[in-house]
Length: 401
Image (cartoon, rainbow, N blue to C red; front, side, top):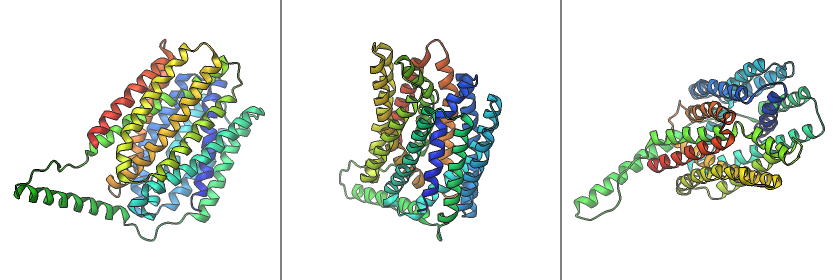
């Protein structure tokens, strides 16, 4: 029941994710201004993630920050309805990003502390899949509001109302864990297992036995770099993606509302990915699955280059839709495995580090993606750069594991 508030929160932001870039263009903004808005918000989210993660672990109070996030999102989204200035939207969106991050580290800690390590992948997969359904419904609502010609202020007000519902449900159902110790136990188990393997290998060597096993810890720096690179590639690709999809739809003489429908299918692919991650949850599968998932995303990014060579616009729409569905599926697998590993690797008191790393890559990509798309090379450059970064992340993960 405690997840219900997060469900409605994601519903509101699902609507906002596609509506806001299209709205900025509609009121006279540009791709570069979309990049500035998204990048500024993500850069501000970096210190916000570290701050909220540190504060919630220090106080061992998590519910209050979830409530703060949802209530502030409600108020700021309500303020959105009073402005049509691009500059003011950028400012409000940056403030929204800071307070929005208040629920992310507490949410991760709640899942990690409420379930044992062997259930983390399954628990994260269930949470992400459940809230992804909320995101999907939000996209459907956005599609319907666009289809029936709702005024922009009405759409924004609906986003605010959904966050108010999220605040109310979280106030009732979210509770702080009585004891906070699961992550500490996992760190002790990891250290004990490392020592045990070291003693075993040493004893085999002293006995004169030939062994092929090496004593190796995971490369934490490689883990962090890979997470940043994956987030960077994703942001480069997806920040201008609504505009790209809108252009492909327009070339096929389809209405702008089809953009929401395509992203609904993208979200549906993510739900399927979370379902698979939960059903196959174990540490070995997670680590090996990371490499394949990142390489697959890189290949999908390069596949979008084929759109330029397709004569029939409807086939272009079909290709883009298929790629986005598979992108959502792959992202879900990656996120579940990485979240579980981060709770295992990141020490208590630094719960926001995962979101900090995601934010660094996302903020840089938010500037780079629209900037490349606005140049002569256009979206082809976006797909090539994103694909290359995904493959570099793949190689970095090979070093980590």
